[in-house]
Length: 334
Length: 275
Image (cartoon, rainbow over all chains, first blue to last red; front, side, top):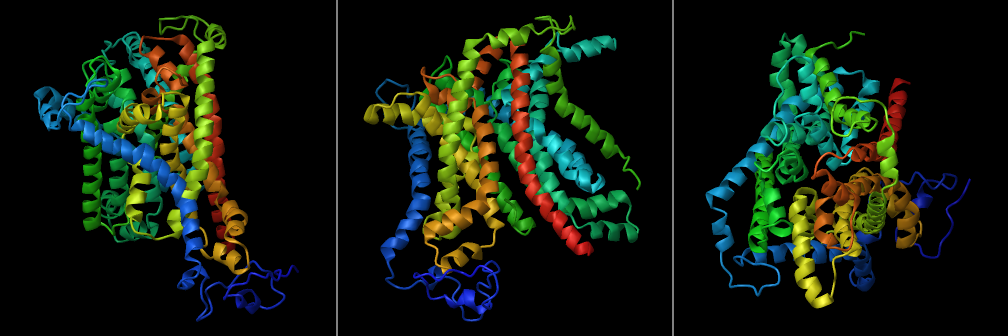
C-alpha cells in the first residue's frame, strides 16, 4: 500500500491524510469533512502571507488571455465606437469632426428597410427552427429508445461540423433554376420556381444552418424533463395535448428561450447564407457592413455604426431574454 | 415495446433527410460528368482529377490548416489558464473580464471582423508597423478560439471535485505540480473537445479571415467563397466531399470522446443502481 510521502512542505492542514488511518490509500481524501478543519491553505487568507506570491498565480492564469482580449477585442470595439462617431470616415483621409451623422444616416428609409429585412429573416428563421426543432428534440429525448438517444442526437447535429460555406453552396446546387429541386418538380410535372436569390432560399438556408443548434439545446432541456409528471398527468386523465401544453411545454420554456436566442442572434449576424443564396435583392445588415469595408462602396464610419447597431441588437435580445427569464423561471437560464 | 409511431417520428425522419440531403447532393454531383446540368450524365472522376491538380486550393488549405493549428494551440494554453483562473479567483472586475472573454460567442462575426480590421489598420499600422498577413489572421482567430475552449473547459471544471487540487496542495504538491499533475489530466477531455470545436470553427471562418488577411494570405474559405460567388464550380463538389469526410471524422471523434465519458459514467451508475 503506497503511503503518502512525507514532505517537508506541509501546510497547516497536514493532519488530513493521516486522519483516515495509516493503511488507507491517499486517494479518498476526507477533505473538508472534519469540523473545524481548514479546507485549504488558500482559504486561510493569512494576512501578509507572501501576498506577492499570491498575486503571481492569478496573473499567470488570467494575464495572458486578458491582455490578448484587451488588445484584440476591447480596444478594437472601442475604436469602432469612435469611428462610428466620425461621419463619413474613410481610410487614408483625415478624420472629420465628431458627430452623430452616421447614426442619422441609419434612419434613412433605405437602411430602415435593410434592418427590417434582417429582423424578419432572423425572427422567421427562429420560428421555423422552433416549430421544426421541437418535435425532433421531443422525439429524440422522450420517444426514441434510450440507448439510441445520444447517437440520434449526434447524427442530427453532425452536419454542423461541415463548412457553412459548402452547405450554402449545396443549396445553390439544389435551388438554382436548373437545379435538383426544379428537376424533381419537373419530373412530377409541376412548374419550377425561382427559389434561388429569393426569400425562400434564405429561409431554407438559414433554417438548415441553425436547426441543429435548436435541437441540441431543446434536447438538453427535454432530457431533464421529469417523466413521472408526464405519467402522473396521464394517470389523472389528461389528454396527450393537455399534458403537452400544461406539463411539457412550461418545463421546457428555459430551453425554448435559450435555443431561440441562439438561433436569433446567429441568424441576425449571418453573412454566408444571405450573400450566397439571397441575391442582390436581399441586402441584410451584415452584408451591408461587409460592403462598407471590403465592397465597392467604402464608408468606414457608416460601417462602424452599422456594426454597433448589430452588436446593440444582439445585446438587446440577450437583455430582454435575461429579464424575461428572471421573472418567469428560476433564472438558471444561460 | 411499442414503437413510437407518431407524427413526430415521421417529421423527425423527414428532417433527418433534410439535414443530409444537401450533403448527399454534393456527393452525388461530385461524380457527375456534366458541368452545368443537374441531369446525371454519367459517372466521372474528372472533378477529383481537376481538384488534385489545383495548386491554389491546396495552398489555401495549407494556410487554413496552419492558421487553425497555431490559433488552437495558443488558445488551448490561454483558454485553459483563463478558465481555471476564472473558476478559482474572485476579483473586482471579474464580471467584466468574463463578459469580454465570452463576447465572441454572441457578437456576430462580422462585427468582430470589422473591429479587428479597423484596429489593425488604424493603430497597428501607424504605431507598430503591423501589416495584414497570416499572423494577423492567427491573432484574430485566437480571440474566438479562446472563448470556445474556455467555455468547454469551464463546463468540465464545474463538474470536477473542487477539493481534488486542494488535496494535492495539502499533500505537499507545489501549485504548479498540483496544476500539471492533478488538474490538467482531469481537464484533458474538455480541453481536447474544446480544441476540436475551435479547430473546426477556425477552419470554417470566412469573415474574420477576410478582414484580417489583407493581400498577404488566402485561407480555404476565402478561396471557396471567391469561386462559389461566380457560379457553379463542379470541382468544389469534389472538394466538399473530401472536406466533409475529413471534418465528419473529426466530429465523430470529438463527439465520441465527449459522449464516451458521459455514457460510460451513466452506465456505471445504472449498473450500480440495479445491484
